[in-house]
Image (tube, rainbow, N blue to C red; front, side):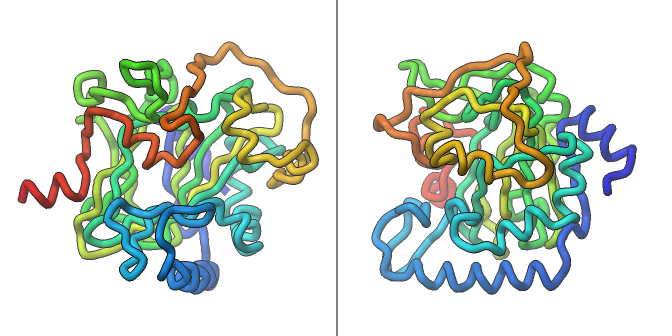
Length: 302
């Protein structure tokens, strides 16, 4: 369970880190599954419903930047999010009834792991209220060198910034972030393997390219209080197949068919690049300004 100080810090800053949320045995099971999944990427030519590949990927030398929706790949990932080490802190922050919105396994591989530009998760999937957060379970030790998640403290209490380009296309990132935000205040979230970060759905965050010799793999879950209902169908139809599936996505507690409406700031996502909903890496590729740069840009400048 979280301490009173941790709960207060989350509400004040918009994020916290919890050490040893998962046991060594749980980590070993996830990593065993992960090694098998990575092995099956050999011979796969392009991103699909399971893999999101780096731009430098080839079938003979796979470069995975994301494994999509792990809860749909193996029951292990339902076990993890429903484990008391994960679910108990969720109920302290979101209340007794919590629903899963989505999951992903971000793979910042050693030497080339892709960055994620500054953004707010809320820009992708606004709900009827903002009682939502993302859990990041660290599968590797995360330090300053291998691309840690960075969060702007208190930004979850501020406005929802524009995540569209000048043509009105949703790009999932904050253009000209260096001039619009005081990035000197960004706090990196470090922790040992098995630690867990929690950040508010409206918190501004990003992460740099991993040019270190160590991977930085994080299992992410996106969660909301049951009384927060999604507002945008293009995203939610990819998450929920039907009403029964929506109800079955409960992590803990009881489903609610009574949305709680709050006067929270909302900018609706869309239209999407290429006319379709895609992962954050492809969407952010539509931006003209890159705060963190790319592997080719960074290596080429060295």
